[in-house]
Image (tube, rainbow, N blue to C red; front, side, top):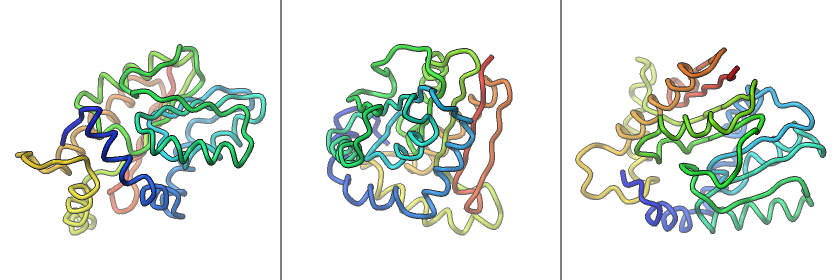
Length: 222
């Protein structure tokens, strides 16, 4: 499951349209709103979304921080950001800023109130280091939230893992030549990232949904 920037950028440029429709679907939207709620955002807060994609979370984030807050969206893929910019322009959101950059090395300074990553940590070969970098951006009392698909660890969900494996192989940057299933690699990265949130935070919480195929984790630093 390659993690080089060019492969990721080219792949997500090609699928920006279908991805936008999937990312904005009602079920996925409910999951997104739940992890955004876990950030406990307040009016005036500054929140950063890593791997903001086509901007599916921007409206909900802006609603919570209000006109006095700021929303920063970071993504590596021009095609994704173009769709996100259309969202911002249509809505006239002056306090939403979109930046081209790699979430592994975010092009921003620290001191923010919250960091969000949805369906993104599985792209990183060292997700623990990435989560640490995101924690370093938080001001005291800041919160970090993650939402990701993964292999189910529940008996009732195991029959669905076959479909998840197929979906992951089709929806990941080229994995030809990989000896390990992309789904297994993704699940390991998701586990490591989410576990790190729990270890690193003061009041970490983690939950599963969709019969275990989706994991949400969040926590606050002192």
